[in-house]
Length: 143
Image (cartoon, rainbow, N blue to C red; front, side):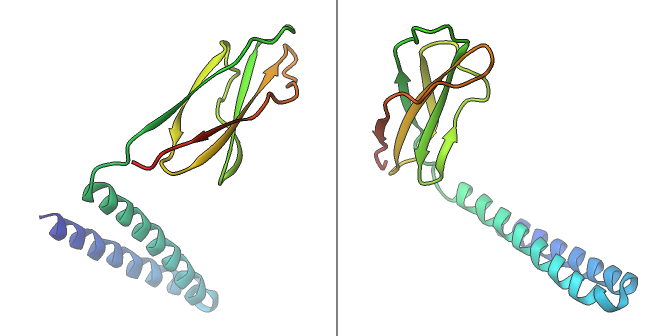
C-alpha cells in the first residue's frame, strides 16, 4: 500500500515538472530551457530528499533521545541570565533563544555517538555577555 502511494506521488511530481517545463519553454524561449531544467533538478532533488527522509523515519524505530543536563554556579555580578553554547561537529551553536534565568539547562538535541563541549556566558542588563565559563565535555553514547 505504501509503495503504491509513493508511486502515485512520484508520478504526480513528474507530471508537475513536465507542466512547469512546458510553461517555462513557452514563456522564456531562449533561456527557458536552461532555467526550466535547473528548476526541475532542484525541485526533484528536494522532493527526493523529503521522500527519503520519510522512508527512513517509517523504516525503523527513531534514534534514542539523549539529554545533557548542565548546571553551573551563579554569577557574582548582576545578570539577567545566561547563554548556553555547544561546540561539536557543526561548530559553536547558541542553544537558547533568550537568556536562561536559572543555573541549569537541559540540551535535548544531543545526537548519539557525538562529543560536545559546553560553555555558558552570563548576560547583563545591557545584553552584554561575559567571558565564557570553563568548558565541559559530554560524550553521547551510541544507542
